[in-house]
Length: 340
Ligand code: FA5
Image (tube, rainbow, N blue to C red):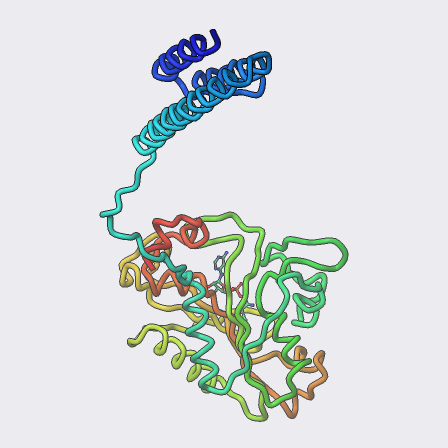
């Protein structure tokens, strides 16, 4: 009796294994047949009532059916796993014959590159490179530079004021004051950095831009030294003769003061939006350090004098790389940046 139902069980289980249409359906059949409370376990329990001789024969048959079905289940499970893998490979594939993309190293921003070159140039001429904070005191940004509170020159640099008597520095000149306090004269220093002005933005004006400050203080410093160093810097940067012109310029911290312009290299002087059709681009202010500035920093202007300049690094980068809109430099546009 049990033998007959074993045969029937084996045949029907095989048929259901073959016809199972999914791994889940197959698993349900396996639990029903081979599980702890399954059909085979049930038959096994019924064997207890059989005479000993018959029990061992049925037992052997039962084990053989169980092993055969286990093998059938395993084979069918493997088929489903393989089909799953094949479906995945159809959608997720990699073309191993494609060339590797290779590392994409970062590159230096044009302003950073120019800044490094200027630092190297001045280091080679014996200058120290100083750093100053972007958040400055009103005293260092204005007062110590001979720009008292009610002085109209404060309005010329639209200031982002912060709490207390602090501000976002409007120029790198406050690092002159820090330099005078830190390095005792004779001294030569430059200070590159970011500055901020509450200005409307156009092709040649940014609210956030870069400058490089430079200063030399010694016993007998003249305008001839200033012109020499400015020319040395511009020739070093442009690797060619750059036409410059000096105009009288007013900065309360220098006397006499000048504006140094360079011939527009974008349009070769013909006129373009960057040079406002004038053929010249203002690059820096410069002059001899005002006696009041030296005095406020504790130096005797009868013993010491010096020159100073403040260069527009962002505008210089535009000239150097032929960039006709200052806004591109801080746009973060990778199409623009990957050109350098
Ligand atoms: C100054 O900032 C003075 N501190 C420079 C100085 C230093 C004079 C030492 C004398 C002695 P000015 O405001 O002109 O000066 O700015 C200097 C340069 O920064 C300009 O020649 C120009 O190249 C650049 N610059 C000024 N405003 C902007 C702006 N909005 N966007 C981009 N560059 C600017």
